[in-house]
Structures are given as structure tokens and as C-alpha cells.
Length: 108
Image (cartoon, rainbow, N blue to C red; front, side, top):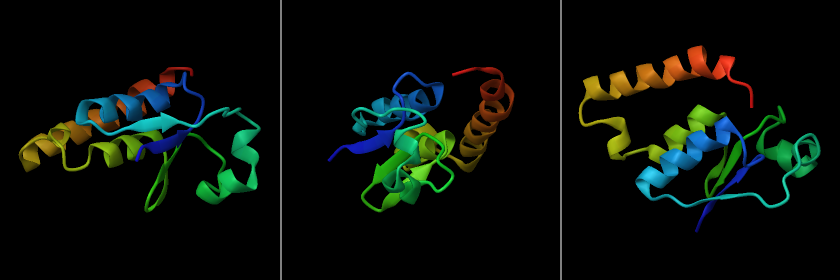
């Protein structure tokens, strides 16, 4: 069963999850007919994320929002988190660097 991500497909935040998923063999489907400022205002969407922000990943256990959290969820337990606590910490430092230094300066 594919996970479903709710957002516009052409988004740097969606790409985080889709790239991680591709590396680890997790299937993610982008929700059909998602329209920003319409789809994310529906009661169904707001149950998944009361803030109304995208992306949101629909999982069998419940929704996850925020792009880095979604990428981490998809990659959990895989080689993408390294093979030691030090490697894990180094990977996390670059995820944080990307989120705080790069993402905030990229539009999209």
C-alpha cells in the first residue's frame, strides 16, 4: 500500500519525502487534484493537520506533517540514518542545516 502525501507535487518540501522514499523503496503517491488554499482548508485535511500547512503524509497509523519529519518517517530504520550514533548525529546535523539555512532561503 502506498502512502499518500497531500500537497502540490512541484514543491521542495514534497521532494524531500519523495527522494527519501525512492532511496529506501517506499511508495508514496501524491494526492490527486490537490489545490493549494482549497484542499488544505477542508475539514478532512484539517483533521490531519489543524494548522492547514502542507505537506501532510497519510500513514496507516495516522498523519504526519512537516517535510523533514515526513522524510525521517519514510527513511526510518534504513541506511539513510547511518550505521553508528556518530553517523546518525552527522546526518541529523545536515538535515537541520538544510532546514534552517537553506530551506528558509528557497522559495517554493
